Image (cartoon, rainbow, N blue to C red; front, top):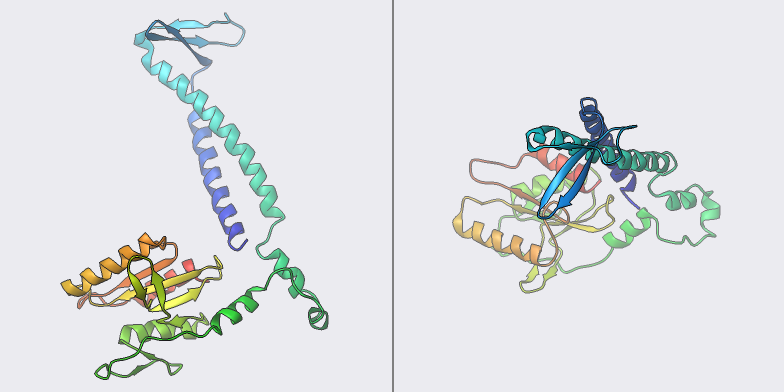
Length: 264
């Protein structure tokens, strides 16, 4: 699964932080454990100590702070035990796991042997090639729209779209410009850029809204974003959004970070 190793490493870091936190708290934890007993509508608390009376020592209301510390200790012990067990499992898996292992088996075969083999699933390059070669009907340009060409000679609608397209082209990130997409309840939209994400193996859409200080334009943009969401395409998952106003222009450093996070 693409990206699983990265997910495992993130979970490993999270569990290590949890262990560190619980172990630090348990250093100052009081001795013993807490036992609860219900008497009618009230709950009574007892402190149980190793080697002492089984039912423990009754803790009156004045010992409320001790009761809370003992309860916290018990919880922290359970969390630390579970986190430690899961951490060991993840470390074993990370040690013996790499993304795209099945694909690598095919790619590591001799070129001549590859010609004789039908892989169990298409390689990433095969999928990407098939995807990029799919034909589609691009949105037409009005006659009064200025001609703006990208570095690869493709016509786009704005200078900012040219900046984006040129960045993707120079970075080797394949895309489809304004490929039609049907959003149920809204109709056909033409995302500025559509990608096949190497990380998720799914399509990701990039919308650049360049006149957000224009109220009419902004309202249309918001309605479109809502339509994406109603179709299960959420920002930060399968939808990347960038914005501009007259005073706030496109930041290519942010474009690079977004591309690295979601596409490559």
